[in-house]
Length: 206
Image (tube, rainbow, N blue to C red; front, side, top):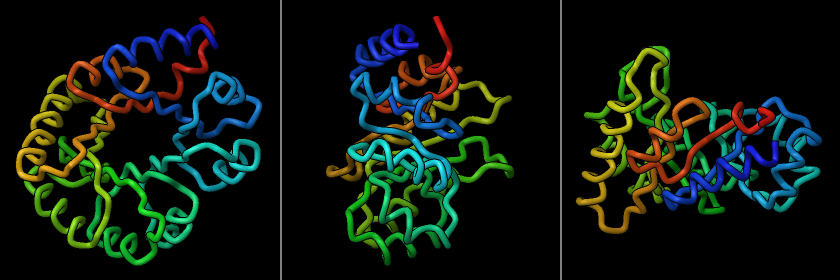
């Protein structure tokens, strides 16, 4: 697994991007090789997994990458450095109330307009971004998870274009793109991903 990890990181670095290892449903021993390799950012989907991992790996920046539940927001602001899934105005209100750590946020886009997925539609993203700024949230970029039936090249190209538009209107915007997973991260990198969320592929033996 270490060789596989090394190869993946080398490829990602050629794009000046970052690997975010997804550690959901893994015990502390299973993710030990990631920590020993020197990785200090982990992607979490469940608070119970975070509590287990953070007891062992205390100097890690934990990113929350699952849909946000408003009743959990006070805990997210206490434990996580980054939230990749900001997608509702109500979440902005709650994060603004509880965030005294200056977390980083990605707006989750639903480019497919898939009713089964969370995310802001393309025609809503500018207004959503402005509302986030008005509420003093540190929004650094955009995130998406394509529908399994969608063409990832189309989705990631649209994400790149939307990100460029936001950047052209907001000079302080950090222009980050959280997109790409185990099956399509190389395509995402070609379209400007700055952080790729990879899980399954990391745990495969070469």
